Image (cartoon, rainbow, N blue to C red; front, side, top):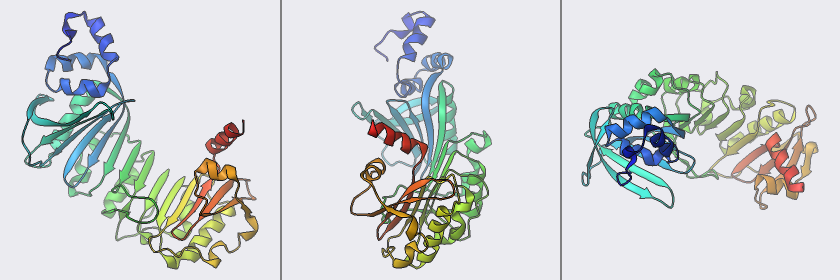
Length: 347
C-alpha cells in the first residue's frame, strides 16, 4: 500500500479502489497510518467473520474474508525482536509479523505484552470494527479463565453465530482434549443463545439444558440426562460414553425410531474403550433395519468396514443411516440437503 499513490486520487476513486482490496490486507496498514484508517472508516469494508479466541497462553482476534485470514494474538510472548509500533484506537502497541503467506493466504501478528491484556484485545476490536462490516461473530474458548464473564463482548451484547468451548480434537473416540468449566460459565454461555454451541467440556455438576441449541458435544457423561438427550430438540449431538452404557444407547436409538426429536440430523456416541458392538445394542429395532445402499455410503462419506444399516421411522417416514463400530455409534439422518445431493447424484 505504501508504494501506491492512493491519496493522490479523488476521495471517490480512493474508496472504489479500497473496496477491491481484501480487508485482511487493508487492516495492517490501518494500525500504522491514522489517515489511512480514517479513510477506511468511511468505506466500511465487508468481512465474512470475526472470531475471538481465549487460550491459556494468549488472547486472539481473527478476521476472515472470502479469501484471506488475519490473526492477531495478544500475550506474554518472550521474543521481542523486529517489533513495530502500532496505533490501535489511539493507543501505541508493539507488534511483530509472524506470517504473511500468499499461498495459504494467511496473515499472523503477535503483540507481546507483560500480561494477557483484555484491554488490548478490546482496543483491537474497536479499531477493526471501525472500518469493517462484520457478517458473523464467533468465539472459541480453549481455557476457562475466571475473567471470562467480564469480557467486553458480553457487555456489548454481541450476538454470536458460533461459540466453541474446548480444544480441537480428533474423531474416532480417542485423543480428545477438553477443558474444565465452571457450571455458572456453562449456563451463561447457553443463555447467550448463539446459533451453535459446541461444548467439549468437563464439569463436576450435571448440565441441564434450558435453551434451544443446534449443536452440542459433551465429553462427560455424568453432565447430562443421557436417556432423555433427544427430548431437548438438538440437531447435532455428540457424547462420550463408556462400555457400560449400551442399554442407555439402545434406549436412545429406540426413542428416535419411535418418533422422538424431529430436528435431529446427527447423533453420535463415542468411546476410547471400544466394545460398543453388543448383541443387545439394537434390541427392539431389528425389524426396522435394512441393508445399506451404495448411495448412502457415498452421500455420507462412510467407511465400508463399518456396519451400516438403513433405518426408517413409521411415525413420519424420516430415514437415517445407522453406522456402527466398536468405538462409535452414529445416526445420520437424511435431511433435505442430503436428499438434494442424492437427487443431483442420480441425475
